[in-house]
Length: 118
Image (cartoon, rainbow, N blue to C red; front, side, top):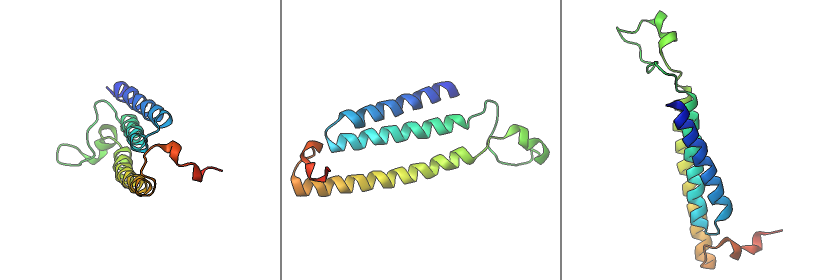
């Protein structure tokens, strides 16, 4: 199961990078970066997966001495939750920049923004 998730994550990363490098429309580039971001999150979660283990919640059925061998490390999930929040913020910022660029030049084609080149 973890291998399928990891392969899917790498596939999403490749699709996102391909879309970001081949598209000329700024909105499509933002969507491609978001797809790549989702792929990175999926890879991180699949790295933290361990078969046969449970959530790190101690109760009457799970003793503290037995817990180390039966629970999953919660750090990858916490990192992904943080990455999701940061990704939403970055996506909102990119959309705000594209909106301002569109208001100024009335175009979403990246070829029309040559004044930023060296």
